[in-house]
Image 1 (spheres, helix red, strand yellow):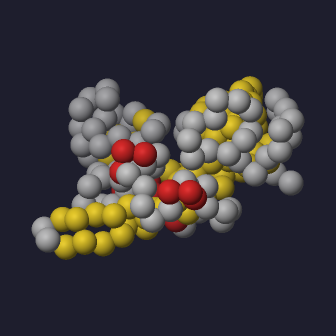
Image 2 (image 1 turned 90 degrees about the vertical axis):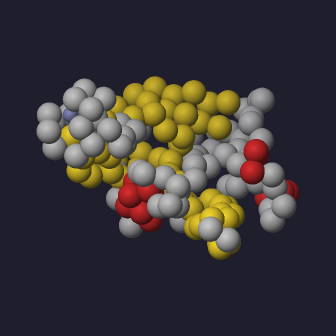
Length: 165
Ligand SMILES: [Zn+2]
């Protein structure tokens, strides 16, 4: 786990409209399994049991045959940087500098060959094309939820990749 990269100066009193992260609770998100798997360090997506189509990001309905009979499959947690963008100005609120986004090759045997992801735990100039990166799961601020007169904070995580040291 890395340091909290939420919105520290708004901690405890930020507006939901500034929330950068998905609502992950199972009551509100039909792909909550993706986040449950992340909490166990697994990087997963959905595969259609009917036609075999693999979607990424995960889906609740197959975009090819419209079946909702999908299964979860694991993806590699390591890959190589194909190309990337590093931003040091005009960083959106809640993100640190540098803000790095990369196309990552998960390998020819991966069910999903290429993914787009942030790269964190990396200094400016710290990666180059061809570098190996690995999945990293981190905590984000819990999501306050109110449903049927009950209130609770749903714990959340999100993922990025980081250089393999
Ligand atoms: Zn299908």
